[in-house]
Image: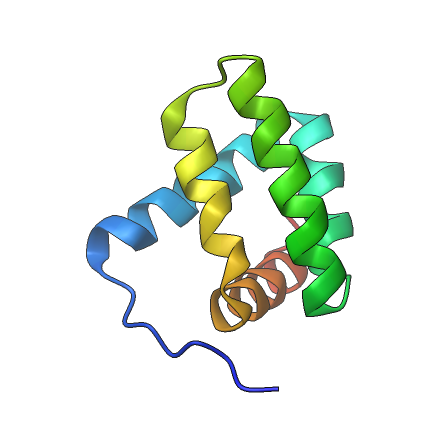
Length: 89
């Protein structure tokens, strides 16, 4: 399967860092993100889409939703997963 090879801008990296920080401070986010990243791409996208809709309905901060939406990209999801496993967030 081909992945979308987007260029990640500095602001994107800052948002990903915020996701990692959220994971450190919120066990629910931590568990959900890890579980999603361990999935194959198609199920990950379905679960992520459902979670984002749930966050929207509960008026979660836009920044959290925006940051999580980067995990739709296979390449970014893979890199974030490797980073998490390497640093054991």
